[in-house]
Length: 517
Image (cartoon, rainbow, N blue to C red; front, side, top):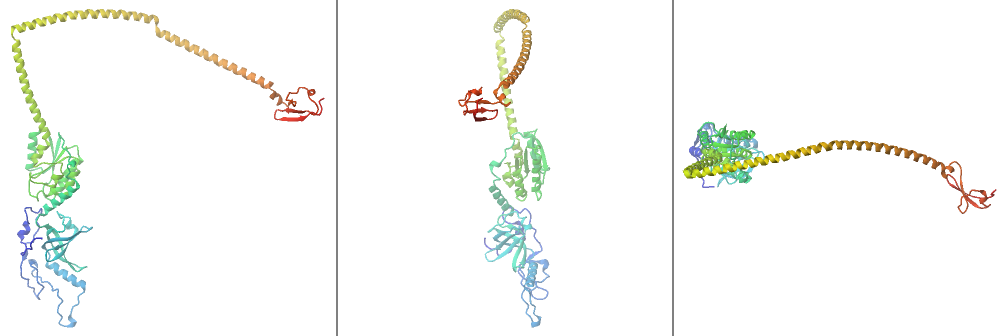
């Protein structure tokens, strides 16, 4: 921290701040605060010394002494509980310092999950705990950090659980750089780290837009400048104006609403232009809002930022797909391709006009040369010879065509007669009918032959089965074989004691001959 100031700040210095940037909103200053170096006298007994930063409206109310009173008698002494004493001190402190500004350096900064912010405000000789509750913390336009010199507005209180003096902050303002400028730099660094400014995220503008959406105030010089430039450069281009508040607390929300409206109706426009005239950093603070930057980044339609003058830069300029130094320049950028085409067409038309005049002049000169008598006579003779040649070729072509037509007619008649005599189609039909008849006859003959042969085969099979020895055996007969395997036809062919074998329908028997009568 720099050198400690010996004098308290004045109201003018509190309103003006330091540096060239102003605050977006003036900090309310109580005009009934007085600066004095003498304590205020109480009505009854002397009070504890008053601070130099005093509220004049409370000058008739004395502070209770925080020292234990000297008892006159042992039975009259007052005994404090810790809680009562702390509460009494808190009430006196809060009454004595209800609203004040304190300057110091932040240390031990801590942002709790609840949203509250805790830090220690210190200078070279003392330190003071500070708490900034969530509701007030959400209103900050910059991010506090250790080592940052700040001006804190709030009230002094006692944290009863620890009996600790603390400053309950209402707002914080950076010392040195303005709050808006610091918030701008912090947001710019964070979005840059996220890649929202990368060139590969920039969408190209369509070369020939049919309609451009303008988010701006519907009244004022900005929209008039855009309309005038557009009509001069591209009279057929349609403009659709979304009325928005371009300054103040509703600026960010209305501009973001316009971006969402055009993206929800993508067929309306091809390009969106954010247009506003110049102003201070407070006037342009709505375009340094993170929610607006996110809305620009999420847009599917290319966005041109035309905020302020050429030297004015906002977060919207960095996130937008293209930055125009002024609203008029934005109108020139969105019509650049069309304007170049029109200039090219004008140049080509001028060239065509010059070339046409040159060719007309050349033709006139040639006509003048050809207008002489000798040239015309030669031209007539040449035309006559060509006409005669054309007549000759026409006669030859007509005779050749007639001859060729006659020959083709004769050939056609001959072929017609031959076809009539042969009548190939009739012959083919008759042959097909004969083939069909023969096929049917052959099929019937084959069917009868197969049926006859099947009947004959069945009869032959029956006879063969009747004559088969196996069939005889099945009726109770047997085949008897001698030892040498010869089929026996007579008992005389065997001898007593000889072994014989009898084959039955099912199985074989072996026996010995006892008698062969």
